[in-house]
Image (cartoon, rainbow, N blue to C red):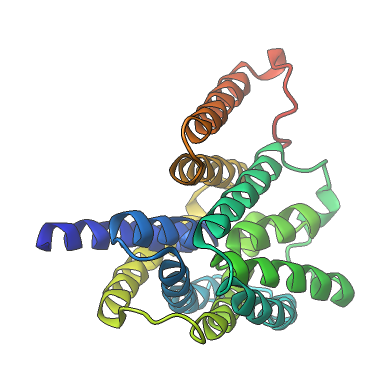
Length: 288
């Protein structure tokens, strides 16, 4: 049992590094960790992940704010809209079968990963202005939609918020990462409130995982300014894509799960090889 706990804690540190470095990916790791390694029920794992990721994100937000990588107005407006959606999603999620939630979770992971890997068309004017705040109407709408997904599938939202801010809003990746963490913290606790109406949690385990994740987040936040933006964006995409393949492999009945996961892994390999070929690559891979 002690070895099992050590494994859970070590993986929780990886969760924190993901949040601190990428501004997302926390729940993408935490939900499978608590479900498949810690052995929690999917709904309990989703609720626990919201607490772990929300608390860890608060710490990471402070670290990124010190580096000027948080757009407070955009983040707060996005977060308030997201909290409304997350509460509704959390209330609905408590009445939906766990397997359906996990499959929906994985599908959204794959779709988001593809968007990150492909990148966006060249919008240098957006990148040039790292201090810009996004239009209020757009932020409210995106926040509500992402918040609904957050509460429904237990994802803190970074795997959706970061692409929304970087791909659609045109914010530089370090700024999108820092602002995403503020949004994640707000929406995670709103979604948790919805789940706590129907789910109970193992608080000692949740507290231990949270502490380990915070340690990892401090390490991840220090690495953000040292990793090139293009590498950060595409690395985030590949990471999410592979995790989506893993969840589908676990949740879909055999041989469908194995087949789908294998196709995704082969696609990732093909795109990675194609990127190395550069000008000879026929695939529409990420724009830098």
